[in-house]
Length: 324
Ligand SMILES: [Zn+2]
Image 1 (spheres, rainbow, N blue to C red):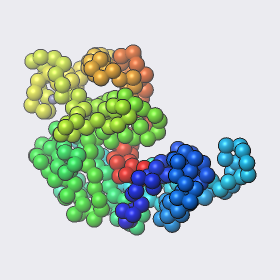
Image 2: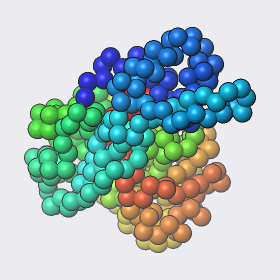
Image 3: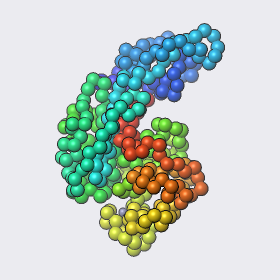
Image 4: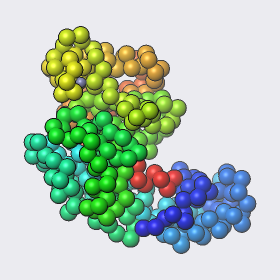
């Protein structure tokens, strides 16, 4: 789908406003400061592209005569999102509103290669008229801009040009980001977040940071490697090659003790960044949701509402989000 002509600032502003609640042309003009004529033109263009639809007449704001209200056309655009975990591949297809249309998971054999991932992706992803592209979430380190990945915990994956390889194989635009960045993006899609950490406790351990409402990636997309900060000098050996990382110390503990380790590390993070929201996620948290929240520092702590599709949904939103 070629949306190059629809990516102007005003188009994105109008789409984002409509996403926040069905609105009439007149109220879009009021909120944006655009002229009614300009709004009519933009809306006509977005309707012609299949991204907006009319829902019928409503009393907008309760005053005056009923006006024709607009909403996102769910099937106007779709995006795929994938999560390359250390033992499985999860893929979702999202509609324009970010809702999951279909979801699948396939196991990945130990020591799987980039070619194995592409083989597993190909039957699950199809380029179509309305498909904007594929987002892939994977462990860091990686470079978000060029899509070259060297994920911790995946032996043999060193400087893999995953974006280029996937685009060539699938014939779709591909965006790569850390699994944790995708995850925090998904949370921010559903509710307002400003200074928050999404703590992901799965086969690895990391955080996605939202600072001032924006995903914080750092100078080399390396931010959020929380699992590989040292919490115990001379502690257990970690997959990254160092000793005493949060991930390794947490993995060596069980039950309440594991939750205490994570709670202490998250408290350091909250102290450092003055965060006001912590969202817990990942397989370990979903497996025992009562264990971790009580061990966290005294801020707003919640468990993700997405379940196991958190990272793939966020990866799809990396692509879909370009429209808003
Ligand atoms: Zn480590």
